[in-house]
Length: 130
Image (cartoon, rainbow, N blue to C red):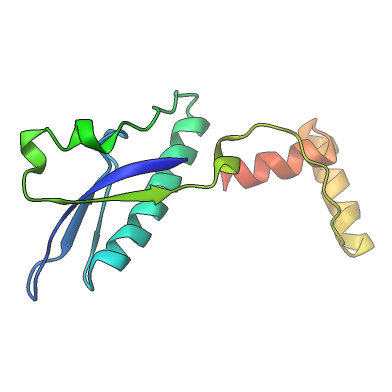
């Protein structure tokens, strides 16, 4: 998935500002230039999407850069695209194999049972709530 990002150029005393117009409130910044600005924007987008999914919110589709460039508030800004791994949005089930010491596995199973979950469900719960 590719989200257009608007980058406000910085200088020696001002950071580069980044806004993701399609994701309300999603922004970032960088001190060292455009490459860092794009990398930081990718991280901000991933965190925004994870939070929205955890809250049960819909994820807006990316807009066309040409439409966003017409907005007055972005006059003079640089445009780029931040590519996001589509797996971030997937709820498809995937079987994985993990290796744990038996004592750790026993603790995990006991905690999952006490929580009323399967082993997989409990691990997923821990990952999402952490």
